[in-house]
Image (cartoon, rainbow, N blue to C red):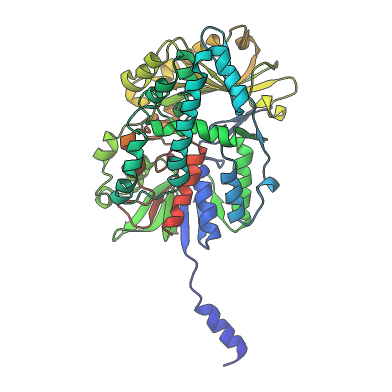
Length: 503
């Protein structure tokens, strides 16, 4: 045998690389795809929209650049780690900068609170609002730190794959009083109603009701104080573009405008993925970054789903939805910081209306994003770029958003026209787009129009959440907001890290 024949023979016997298909290119999908490709899987991302990013989509209009979804980066090193896995340096792809203050919280009486990272600055703000609460705040901060050490450091990328995984950590969760709500926990330490709102609103950023989300989510306070609140220059879309470029440079492929019709299952194992155009992609591994409920309901035939039946999916409790208004103004509002929370006259009552009564109330609490405070290039010169979001019930509330969407958006914008927030706002709006719970269902294929999939209750967390490794189908995995550890950028990126424990 010649050397050339031996060489050809050797090539012939090399095993084919294993094939992975990732459905959806949100942050969870991108993180999973980079990890899979770096591990030697031949990885293809299938994205149903015309741009990558999932909920982190980008709209452009008249020179304004709008980030559609996540805008708050709390742990930049999760992206640094992804770049290192790809053999790259994050700073070659995107620039991430800190925000100060983290948030300005506007109260209904026209006063405000600047939420900052430094102990001295934060305690000065607490003293200004309620001097008697400084000591209580310190105790709350110590509790938040303790929860963080267990719930994030130890469990954020822990695979809750069996009931024993849950049993092992249950004593610690009980010690930390995970059965109490965030609001109840904060209220044990802090007496001022204003400050109770300041230190309990954060579960809303991941779809949770502060009145019933587990006190485990109090760790968000320590997480933000430890690593800060950041923003990607060019917008969150620039971070998506950087990760896509990284993925493609290490050999990954992404197909846009490609909706999946079915995950083919044979003898209990994924075999391939079929697109709506009829293309079939063979797969050893399928990772869904799509909505978990709709992945099971729409892509996997009922005979392959012993655990996640339609009935079980319908019985889960779903997180709230949102009305989001993207708008650009022909003037600047320099006094408004990058991130603001605008609280209405009610707190507990409004949360109950949204989550329990499922009604659209006449008052609202809002999150206002002004990225041009950090990056003026996102709007034409002399202009400002914004989005404002209002938590509302998911589609289980029965509202007809085609009928009420415009009127509701108009009320939100009118409510912001206070002298200390955005006077004469509507006169200066030159670009506008409205996104309602119906859009979450139609544009993002989100079951019930939920903006965050399953509500983060203790009974729907960790092992009780749909698992990262499907309990029904071998070779099928989940990343993103609907699986462990949950919504928010750290949650969805860490959900891809859990895959490492299985692959």
